Image (cartoon, rainbow, N blue to C red):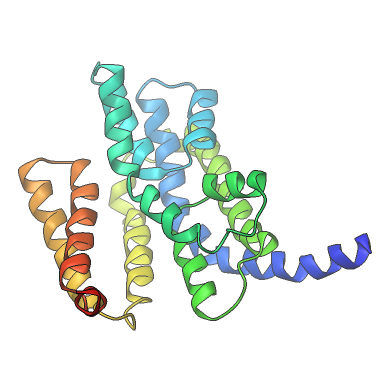
Length: 237
């Protein structure tokens, strides 16, 4: 019975691993860049790797590096990282509907690995009428996590060999991938007004209050528009 269970889970795990390939390609420049910038900011190689392993959130790690080097109060560092990562509260509320059958420890692991692409693929999996199994979920999550930590190590070791990483243009891969994730949900009702409102709110917030608060502000504007003006909201009224 144990062998049968293992064999049934292996194809799901491998299918999840295949879903991780585009993310691995898109995130690689950022993982390497973080390692290089972390050492340049004064962190040791071990500290850079530990930060990637513990936080596992590229934008938050970059914000943390900027604030650590500016002698900012610890509470403000934490608050800024929470602001960047607040969208994960929304992700977990949505994805939790797909993971409700999981036992508590598996749920805890699932929420730790709940990155932007992981959430998008989880939603897409559910929309296609397929169960979000733990094997599939971890098949996607583990390669992304492992490579992210390894990339921080490699970047910390050899990042000083690239004097201007931005000149290569590789840092543009991840925004393009995220744009693809958003466009992948374009068939949803009221998609365009919500995306447009969120983008406008984020841009205005970036100009007025700056980074990293524009991330949460843009999300809040999109949610507000969806709640007040979406067809679903009008039906409730």
